[in-house]
Length: 366
Ligand code: NAD
Ligand code: MG
Image (cartoon, rainbow, N blue to C red; front, side, top):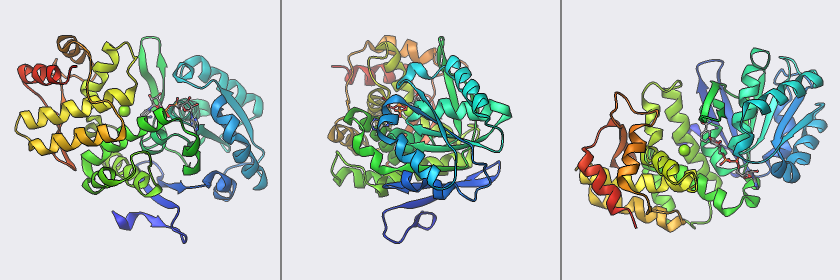
């Protein structure tokens, strides 16, 4: 793994290569103050001077001028579209507004869309870039921990419909991803935890060293090194399964129970909170069925608690099972789980006896 992460001279930034099925691949550049170098990094990449930055109002206040300044200094002639921060902006009418702004600006296939923000901006702008004129270049500039380690990696983009989340989308790989870790300093703690839930998930899936690091490190801190390691887990997984036909299902660890918790709480539980409780449930299901030792599920639970994520719920176990059965990820009515063999090794496509499932969900209810 170490071979794949090239560190620059002062050791503060990392370049993570990603192989893709389309153009061979791209690089994720990660480190503090990276936005200031965006112009330099985009120069000589064969794109015209037209770059449309898509961002949200919260991120625009803090980081838009830095990015625009860097682009202008490198000879680009950028403009910006600012959406309202939050999940409700991830819809088709916002996509339509983006297309109209792209047209007015004169963006064509030689230009680029730059997504500056969290997963909402990345998914929305990514989808617009994938479909506008059958696809224009996309640059991802993730500004939340979740977007850095999870949503900006893997090429999935899309929007929500009134009927449900992420129901329309496309695969779109970026030209480059520029992740400025200095942006994380202004991230609200709650949002930091959303990224930590997925990072801990990544560690459980295939990085025991990262897991041990989190067990020892300052729980309020995620350094460049651990963000890079977390990204690597997702990169490795999606490289091997770009279109979600197998291995990528491992990334669903904690999400089977997690999605049911989100739904049954009427989305008052945040995604990362639900995933955290879902990880504890997956760990307990694994130890209850004898797939892993009890110490494994104890460590998973202790780590999530240590960083400040919830590990208990208040929902009715029967209702949770009903919600899981109606999830889009079930196959032939069977609920599919990702279970844990050991820290760093999981197994997907598992089914669990309903008695065991109800028992674990009841144990975790307060
Ligand atoms: P988000 O984009 O809504 O960002 C969270 C909040 O933080 C927003 O209010 C935003 O304005 C603010 N923010 C962003 N960067 C900031 C910064 N540096 N400082 C201060 N505030 C900042 O949410 P998110 O958690 O980044 O992403 C969630 C979205 O990602 C969901 O829509 C989800 O469906 C999607 N997602 C996609 C994938 C994928 O594979 N495409 C994977 C996971 C999640
Ligand atoms: Mg998730």
